[in-house]
Structures are given as structure tokens and as C-alpha cells.
Amino acid sequence: MMVPPTVTERAFTRLAEIGAAEQGKALRVAVDGGGCSGFQYDITLDEAAEDDLILEGAGQKVVVDSVSLPFLADAVIDFSEELIGARFVIENPNASSSCGCGTSFSM
Image 1 (spheres, rainbow, N blue to C red):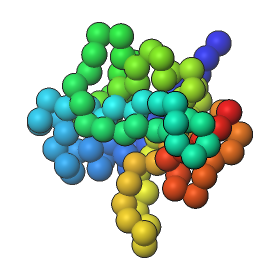
Image 2: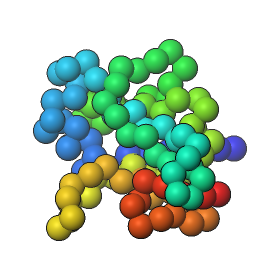
Image 3: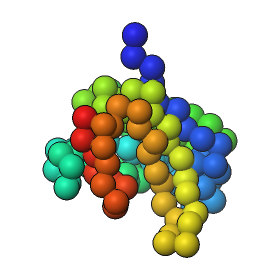
């Protein structure tokens, strides 16, 4: 049985700070082919589609399309603030390796 991804409270809080729900938007986390390691994350503000998995918290939504879902099983979607900048990050146990940019991985 596939375990869906989870979203941290910090990520939902950041979405609330930027007013995503008020704009009718959700954080879309998708996986595309490409990047320096074979797959890359595509993280955008978007509207939910019919076949999306919708994760809700703090009045906000994070959506994952059905094609990307198997790549994100048991992953944690978080928000990180570091010296190099603030961004949404994915902690993905399915990724066998990732690159320094943090947006590309292999399985």
C-alpha cells in the first residue's frame, strides 16, 4: 500500500503567509523527467485538478497529480529557510541520490 506524502506545519504556514488559498491556489508538487539526476521536482502555485491528491492544513492545500504520486510516496514536503534562501523542499525516501541543487533526484 502506497503511503501518501505528508506536508509539514511549516510548509502550510508559509502557504498561508503568501496567501495561496486567498488567490484560489494550491502548492502543486510534481515530478518531471529531466534535471541533472534523471527526475526533477516542479513546485508551483496552481489550481487543483480533478485527479489530484489534495493535502490540506491551516486552510491551505498542497496538490500532487496522479502521475507524480508514486514518486512522492512517503515523502515530506517542507519549507526551509537557510542562508542561501527560503524554499519549499522535498524529503523523499524514494530518491536514491540527489544533486546539490535539491530539485533533481534519481531512483
